[in-house]
Length: 184
Image (cartoon, rainbow, N blue to C red; front, top):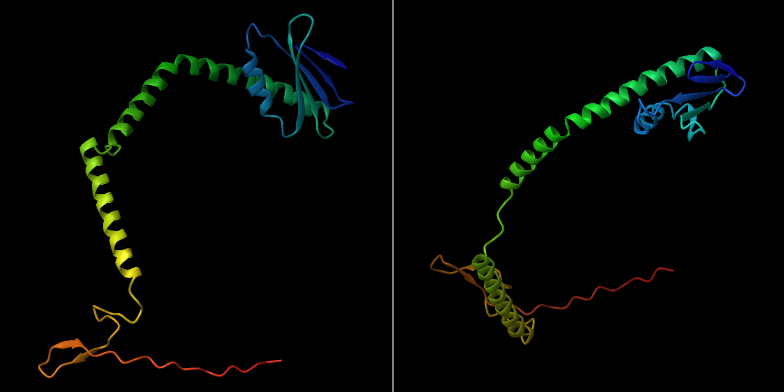
């Protein structure tokens, strides 16, 4: 393995070891930086005996020395970027929370109001009354036969001599039987 400052590159295995100083860069930054490369590299982290964090990155395909050096540089840049992103996030946390609280309070004030207890009780009474009325109608109609038609709704409307429309007397329906042909 060829030694580089803060990393080791192994072209035979297409891998790099990048040493991360956790006094400068938090573990979260190192992991977020490595996440950018998971499509092309197998990645593993480990703490050495000296307490340094080491990121092991092995290419999924063969990589040249130049490609591996480029990845080390990109990793370092991403490490800085992710560390700054975390730091800015910490600084702006209270502002983000205040904006979110304001947005949630506005949306909560726009939500429809729940019916008051008196409205809910009134709705419940109306539903009970409708339920009772429906029960009575079902009882009354269950005793009727299909031939009874007190409202005359099954009779076609015919013109009366005085021009008013009225229901004509119902004719008894004739049963028609159509012969079935058996197909074999």
